[in-house]
Length: 133
Image (cartoon, rainbow, N blue to C red):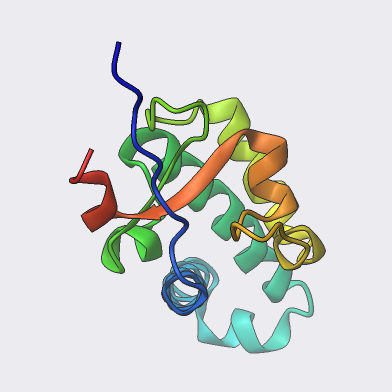
């Protein structure tokens, strides 16, 4: 029986870039839905963006392996059980709710996995690294 090789965690730079791309895209969706005036006048518009972000990133991660920003920056979220398979929708929702709290991703282990990944049993990896296994 052969052991599945370990895949490292994606860099902070890629993950932050993916978050910026996601946030920008989600902001555009909210502006398209409520209009530019609604965006500037509604004090809750930032929370609308957060809601769209959580929904978009959880759904895209469960279906395609990463949020829109993660797909664009060539990183994926996979199970951390050695199979590197897709993460279930429920675990993706849990993971994204923890990301929305901000602190869990900032508390991380030496391997780069944040509390949100540990709670969801996931790992954020580069596509290039997945192709080597």
